[in-house]
Image (cartoon, rainbow, N blue to C red; front, side, top):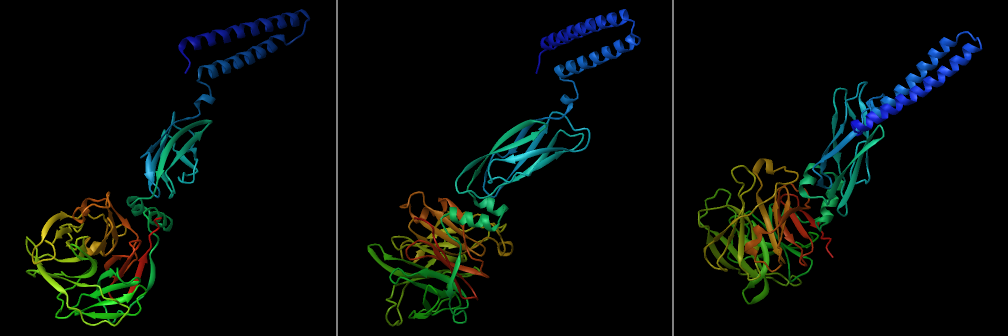
Length: 460
């Protein structure tokens, strides 16, 4: 902006120009009078008026008070926040130096990258000096900085928006197909795919699932309605065969796991969790285990080892059983919490023995991106599995993965590991999840339908 001294100098210069013009015009008048030409005074007045007008325009333009200077010019562009995950939105505000007088003022907007969907323009209304707009974003493969430009009457203001990879919160706000695909890819998993079906008439209430370590391509399945067996089937749901459990009749058998048979015994065992207690009336619950059979041959009855355990503060309903590298069982409870947001707790057995479970604290669960049954029954854990520094927990509406910062971290610490929602198929009553035998990807099943779903991993 010009200083008062500069403006005074400019005004003095323009006055001098006017004096010279007047002097020249005066000479012209004198010559015209001497020549006796009529109308010279009128020509003088017109010429002087034109000179005064031109001088005035020069002066007002120089001083910043002319008609061109009265046109609004953009002075600021602000974004809030200045960094978002792809598929989220930022809020923008454009500000001009004065309000428009004749109708809305269009301000052109441009983004330097397709990662931000800037509207073509935003309009500032008469009597206003600012207008707000919404800036949606798209999924990005890598973090990206986008420049946003706002232009009006030759003046431009800029702002920058940092767009990162899609996260759970962004996906919740914008669960489009593109955003879901990007979220799944960025989190190491592909889209769920149905690998086959099992006979849901034979197993109508599939509640526990585990992948065989000894027999590649096989899964174990259990029905929760007073079972006397565990079922084996291929990963496409075919070749469904029972494994009778000698001397066992389940009460509410909700969970399966496969892990070492115990300290110093790395042979794989199938663990069965008879741990359901919908009404909270059982004084204790049962956990069984038996060595994995060879599924290539005929299957006869097996006699499992069994222990009875109880909770330190009374009966609790649970449907998720985990087993660590030493063969120690862990239970994740199915508690919705007073507001339905989830209040699962982790308990550990004292080895594989009768006794009282040890309380290890709460298990935090993120809200489902698309809550359905959670709005009715709360965020409750219906299944789980553990493998190589990772834990997956199933709820009726989502699968949550916990990843250890250190792969050697003990299973007892998993509630403190970073967690995120990962892809899952929509199932009428999702009750089970299990890592694939190689640990890359996981299977899910639900009750009543017989579908087998697999979520492949995309990790190298």
